[in-house]
Amino acid sequence: MRLRRGGAAAEAEPGAVATRAAENLAAAVRIATVTPPDGPLSESDAATFAELRALLEAAYPHVFAAASDAGSLDVVGRAGLLLRLPGASTERPVLLMAHQDVVPVPQDWQAEGWEHPPFDGVIADGRVHGRGTLDDKGALIVLLEALEGLLAEGWTPARDLHLLFGTDEEQHGPSAVAAVELLQERGVEPWLVVDEGGAVATGAFPGLSTPMAAIGASEKGITTVRLVVEGLGGHASTPPRESAPGILAKALVAIEAHPFPAALHPISVEMFEGVAPRLRGPLRAVLRRAGSLSGLLARVLPRVGPELAAMVRTTAAITMLEGSPAQNVLATRAAATVNCRIAVGSSVAETIAHLERVIGDDRVRLEVQEASEPSPVSPTGDDPRWQALVAAVADSYPDAVAVPYVMMAASDARHVARIAPAVYRFSPLLMDKAQREAIHGPNENVSIESLGRGVAFYRALLTGDALGPPAPNR
Ligand SMILES: [Zn+2]
Image: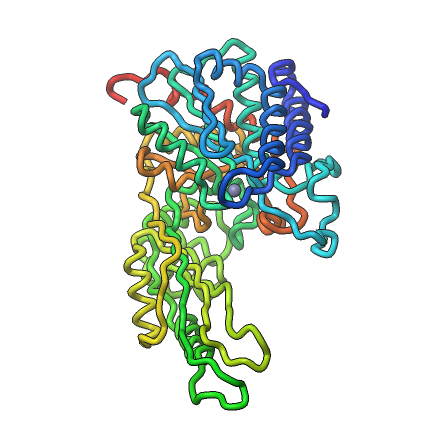
C-alpha cells in the first residue's frame, strides 16, 4: 500500500497536491467496499471496511487525531464514520459528507467494456480509473486531503466540523440515518451540509462552452410501488379471456401513456437563468426569460430528452416484472415494480393517487415498498451558505458558472434535511458527459487535475469568511 501524507506537501504546487490525492484515491479504489446487503455486516465486509478505515487513518493522521483526541470518533450504523473536529465555537456547525461504499460491477466486467480492471486503481492518461473514483471516493479523498493539509499547517476550524462517511448510501443509507439520530440526540443542528450530488459538468447544455457547477439545492423524492394482479392459474391450454399478466400489462401501458404533470420548479428557473448569459445560440434568449416562460418550457423540455423530462416532472420507471414460473403454466400472480422519482413540490400521496387514477382498475393492487418525500429546498441567492459555495467554486474552477439544480437521484443528504435547513449536494469534481454516464457503469474515472481542484474547493470553503467565527448577527 503506497500512501502519501496530506500534510507533508501542503504548500507544494497544485500538481503535487493533485498527484498525492490521485495516489490515495487509487489506493482507496483497490479496497472494494461494495455496498453490503441489508442485515448484519458479514465478516468479509467488516474486514473490507476496516481496511479502508485503516487506509484513511494512515493517509490523514491529523484529521483522525483531531477527532479522536476530542473523543469524537463514532462508528455509526454498520461501519459508517462520524467525526467531529472541534472548532473554536460549537455554534453553527458544519457537516461535510461522502460515502465509502460503491456499487458492484458485473462478474463479467470485461464484457461490460471496462478498459482497466474496476478495482485495480489504475493511474493512466492523467486519470484515476476504477469503481468509486467519481461516486464517491473521489469526493471523500479531496475533502480529507484539504482538511489534512490545513490541519498540518496548524489551522483549526472556527466552528465544529462534523464529517460523515456512510457505508450504505447505495442501499438507502442506514448508516447516515443512524448518524442523523446521533447528531439529533447531541443537539447538533448543522448550519451547512455538503454531500455528493452535482458536479462541475461540461457538455451539460447545448451551446454552453464553459463548465457548469451544478449544486443540488433539493432532491426528488422516491417511492417504489409493486403492482400485483392475482389470477386463477391453471393450464396454459385453457387460458381465460383476461390473464393476470394481461391486466398488469394494460396498467403498465397506461402508466407510460399518462406521464405526470410537468412544471418548472423555481430552482430550475434559477439554473436556466444562471447559465443563459454564458450560452450561445437560440437557447440563450429563451432561457434568459425562463421565469416568464416557465409554462412553455415545462411543455417543451420533456420532448428534448429523458434528462430534461425528469427535470420537470415526477417520473415512473417500470423495472421488475414477474409472472408464471413455467412456460405452460398460467400465472396465479403477476407483479411489476415501478420506481417513481417525485418532483420537488409534489408528494408520495400525489404520486400514488396519480398511478391509481391512470390505472383505473381495482384488480391491480398497489403495494408501496418504499416512500421518501422530496427534500426541502435549501436557500440560494444571497444566503451566505450558498454564497460560500459559489465563492469556493470561483476559487477552484474560475471558468465555471455555479447554479442550483434539483438532484434527480437519491443520496444520503435526504436523511439530513430534517435536522439541517441548508443541505447542498455537490462533488467538486469535473465530469464530462462520458464520465457522468460512467457512474454506476463501466469506465468510471476522474482526472488528476480535477482532484487538485477539488482539494482547492474544500480549502476555499473551509477557510472562507462564511465559515469563519459565527457572529451573532449571521
Ligand atoms: Zn453516491
